[in-house]
Image (tube, rainbow, N blue to C red; front, top):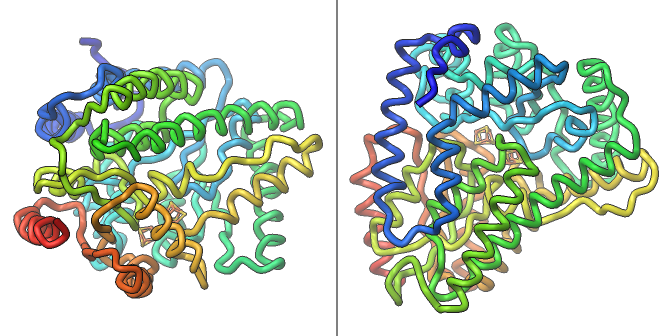
Length: 423
Ligand code: SF4
Ligand code: SF4
């Protein structure tokens, strides 16, 4: 076991609190992940990444910084990471999936704010996230009011740059987003000192598309009956895609898919025949937010897909690779982003259509609509989702929760009743 204490000390982490966090996370991971049966051999890599979550990857980032590269942290799939890689920067998705530093966060934020926002603020104020500390620049966005205002405070503690996200999808909104992407390009060039050329951007687009293609392949294999991989493992793979090295990650996921293909050919499932298949839809689940998948998969059901930004919403669309000039490539980046059907848009009928399509393609018996507490965009949109699914005859269960473990028994009772009902 490598000792990273010196590295964490240099990053100014709160060492005792950080050690406690790693112990809790290790135990939590053991209970939720390592206790699973019939896991794929390829999951060993993911287990290794998690066991080194604050170690090896951070060391790689610091070594890259010593070699002159810059590290950028992001929170939303709208931020086009291709521009970062094209400038020889490194992009990492920052975790905001744990109730860490809640007390610290509530000193600067209202108590009644989405747990994801509280989490990224808490990680920073409590000095517990080496990824946040290692970042040279955090790129925020104005997706929802809570995030937009929270970045004003966050920027007091960490260099932060904010992109304005459109709320509609008219021509003027495309233009707004195009301007924002060009503005980000300049900021990245200024931060890294590197010019983004058409050649470099073309390579970055291909690299991130390859990662999306590997995740698409994984998702397609999950359509098989019986399902060959648990929802927990698939979620973990998607979560890790946000901070692992993209080339290495793509290679590992493709190897895992080869193994999955064999399993599908042998008609081997990860759960007994007849286990209820469910689609999870709604807010993204950042590491280590595994509560609901764990509850669902210990209640006689299996999750076969996620309609979420840590899932289909992020991997469904690729960037057109046929752009020849920088202008064309940026236009292609803009077009892909504007296909994202986040609830921050109005109207957002595409999302409802996508949920219905996925429910049919994955042959699910029901949909669990998951919303973080106080997340107005997804909470309000749940009404329309529910109405549309009821009309189509697809059962839906609406869950609103946070990152605490207090409601776990209550969630279990509701999920079990739902599973019983849809059987
Ligand atoms: S749900 Fe919306 S705000 Fe959140 S990551 Fe996705 S696009 Fe961004
Ligand atoms: S989960 Fe909802 S409220 Fe929270 S940051 Fe995302 S969009 Fe905003």
